[in-house]
Image (cartoon, rainbow, N blue to C red):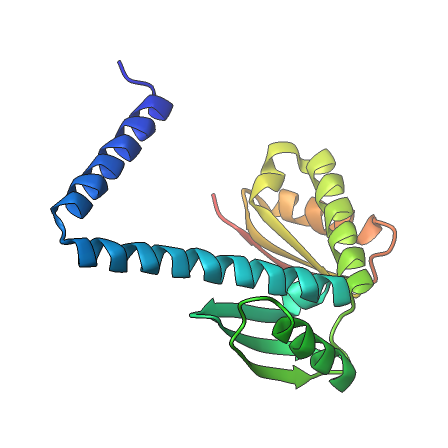
Amino acid sequence: MMTPVRSRLMRALALALAAAFALAACSRSDQQQAQREIERGAGDALICAQVRTSATALDPATVTLVKIECASGKVSMSGQVRSVQERDQLIQAAREVQGVKSVSADIKINPKAPTGNEIADDVTLATKVRVAIAGQTGVNALKIDVVAHRGVVTLSGDVPSPAVKSVAYDTARSVAGVKGVVNKLEVRR
């Protein structure tokens, strides 16, 4: 009997062989064009990674607030940042990445956009709430999604009973740092 890992390896090997045979059947110019397209795709992935790294260095929140896409050396950014200065720094950092041919930015200014520290605080608070709920409800916590935003925690997902819903809500309210709880849990048996 074949294990799942071995099965996946065999499928991957079969696909690789099929691709190799397909390329071998192509003309030399088709092979060269395919190679250029592969290299271009890899180059775009590297450019995007470098632009994201530059954005993270400016403000870690940028990675979650700004979508960055790359195609043929062209970088497109959309989303929001807190200030014009941050937007300008982000655009300049993208232009400085080797291989970038152009940068288009549809980045809105939102003075209330969260900072990296605020996002980290939200993630930390959500994690504390998840752990507290898991301690109280056990396995039932697996279907509870916890999101925190500036101290307000939203619970969503399915729970098996009204009692679990109540315990999850009360537990979330009791965690230090929680300013409010929005309970969107639904009882599903």
